[in-house]
Amino acid sequence: MAVLIDHPCVQHKLAIIRNVDTGHKRFRELATEITKFICYEALKNIKTKVVKVQTPVAEATCRKIDTDVVVVPILRAGVGMLEGILELVPTARVGFVGLYRDEETKKPVTYYERFPPQIKGGTCIIIDPMLATGGSTVATIDMLKEHGADSIVVICIVTCPEGIALVESKHPDVPIYAAAIDDRLDEKKYIVPGLGDAGDRLFGTSHKE
Ligand code: PRP
Ligand code: URA
Image (cartoon, rainbow, N blue to C red; front, top):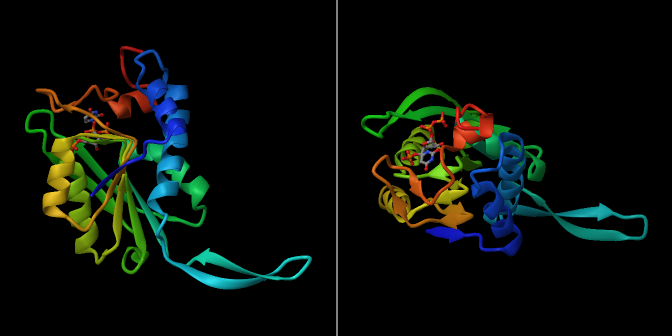
């Protein structure tokens, strides 16, 4: 299942982050802001418990989050979305997956993984701005499930039908939340129109800027 966050405030920010003239400082700020909005929607049905809170006036019946939230950025570009999640869920734990796409094969190559034990029984949020072929996301879901995770959501900024189809075919239980579902992949497996190389744009490592 893919959920498009079509809210005007998100779409306005998306128009700016896509712009080739947006520099890395603004790109980073926008990645944080957009992620926060998407996460807000993605956690709509997260488990809560009823608690009683004494206000200065009377006792109120309230709800608090009742699950361990574990956010898993896919290195490197996923780190650019971490702050947005932590602003919304400051108590979230953080696991890391190091993956890059081999330039020839376009397949993900894993170089690092480190997860907190709370992935078992908790709610895992995979973050990566670009879900292109879906290979990196599927590899990360595979790893999390091998370590016992059974509640996983994916948050990206831009995806496309090919990537969604791969994730849905391998992991139909994992929903994808995105600010954009673009047209297609090009011959280099970049999302079109997309926003270019998200890692380079986030961290200022492109020679073009
Ligand atoms: C990008 C992106 C995803 C992956 C998406 O990472 O951040 O991790 O490609 O592609 P896929 O859906 O086809 O697997 P990249 O390889 O550029 O590494 P980086 O984050 O270190 O820049
Ligand atoms: N990785 C990126 O950074 N951008 C794409 O469009 C695809 C993969």
